[in-house]
Image (cartoon, helix red, strand yellow):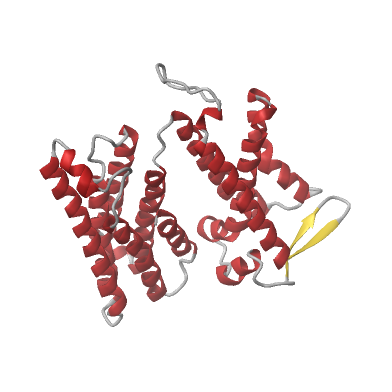
Length: 336
């Protein structure tokens, strides 16, 4: 749910020039994912209605969880009201969505309750909820900013909620899983912002394509230098993740951060191989250049996605194989 909400929010932020009606529909899709998430049981182990019976604060815990369900249902109703009543003014529709964001944020803050919740997850949940509410308050309090800006502020709030939902869903239990999560977040930032910044504006370097590949992997060579050649699968997975962030996020970032106005629909279709033999880019390899067609780009993206998924899933399930500095007193498990 977090990935869907964050992804739709990014589409909204990367397409600020589309019609406000389209923005409202996209925002509704992003918001309803949070509503559905609140309707579903969360946590690990037995369902909450069984676990809560053994909680010393059973009554309060039951009420809190029922309130989350009620909030989720209310959010879904608000989204349906927006989608089923397009004749309402756009300001009214956006205010309904703003109310949904506030309810979702309240539910997010309440989720910090619970003795089995890690401290840093509590902080991130409360901080995300409060920040989202503040953004909505700013958007509603200052109507002179205009409806498109209000829609963008709502999209930012939903993006923050989506990212936090992904982190919460992963729920790392080992400090080395937290290290891996940090490496993944760094890889995404590095690929989406740093690499795309260079790729969007500076392609005059000789053998640019080869240099681009080297920049994908160069930060993670440090893993191999410090930890040994045995870390090459993790370095490979992270480098390929950077390349995916570059190839899939290229014009999303260009539109969002650098003022490009690329039509994202046809472009992403070309990247994902849906345009068959249409030329999508030219790989500059020094003395030669290689035409890259849509089906080739799509195939390379799918293969890389599979390799990254398998690699990161393996390291997530085997955190003891990650060499990381742990807090004092943390028990260690020998590699198996």
